[in-house]
Image 1 (tube, rainbow, N blue to C red):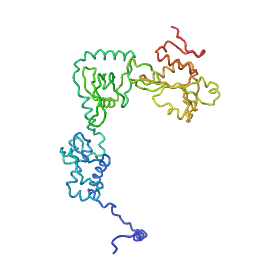
Image 2 (cartoon, rainbow, N blue to C red; image 1 turned 90 degrees about the vertical axis):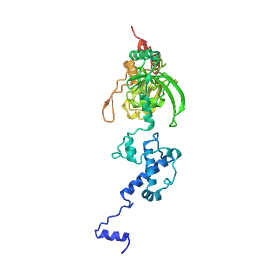
Image 3 (cartoon, one colour; image 1 turned 135 degrees about the horizontal axis):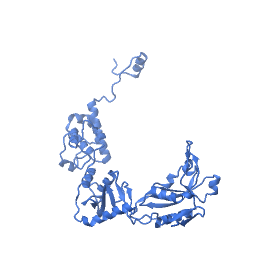
Image 4 (tube, rainbow, N blue to C red; image 1 turned 45 degrees about the vertical axis):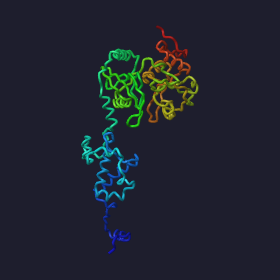
Length: 398
């Protein structure tokens, strides 16, 4: 009898209608497959970091699990017999780094997971998406650690003044942006409290190899803390309602230069249509689209000829003005209201046949738009109005 089934045998059996059950290609038992899969995760870690996984409370949970697992594998004759032929990096014979010898971890993955508050029976290691790193835990502990502010009498009038300026509109609040700068004198709203960055220490490299600085942060309830910049940034990013409080004397709203303490919030843009429509062609030099955006203007107009908002035609950028420390939506509404008497009244259909009324096109010379922006800069625009018959900005009658 043949020791194995040949291709000819399989063809003959197939013609006779006989099905042949094939053996698993790997020939491994479920237990052996689990051992190999667990070792492959250790190999992936080694390939990514160039070193063996180590023990220690400051290590990531996955690294600690791999370190425990590798020790158990080395102590098991059964595991060594399975894995030694597959050990392409020689991990089973490598020695751990010196610092790994000083820490004793629990002897199993399950025990380590249990000590960290994770149910190892219900979660695969690769699915522990809610486990925080040690760096995140330290940051949260820092935020929670506060002391009474001994000289709060010095800061209390500042917080009261800021509240008054928020009420009368001298200051505004902006959504805190990821990785936004934190400087001395900055103010934020965090977890419903106003906070002041009273001082900023010297720059240094933290335990995780990242640049950081120590802050003195004062809270409006009379407490303070010595947060790290990164800890404060983490807290502001985590709080979905966090806000940055703008400064009352932030300078001009529009500028060609970015000041050090500016919080960029977008730009005002002025566009001109390239449409060959007779009316547009006849009024091209005075027909402008005025808008405000927080993104890139070029990206915004990339598909203009397919968008009724842009009169279904390509456009050219006439000018842009940097916008800082101000609410984009309110400014856009103010500009559109100022030039409302010169708004283009037109109705177009989009590609679905829906009627669209572009609301941002105005029959206004560009020089007049520039003049309006200048009056926005000096805060006098409320004293003026646009006269469409004269195509001029004129003083309001008091």
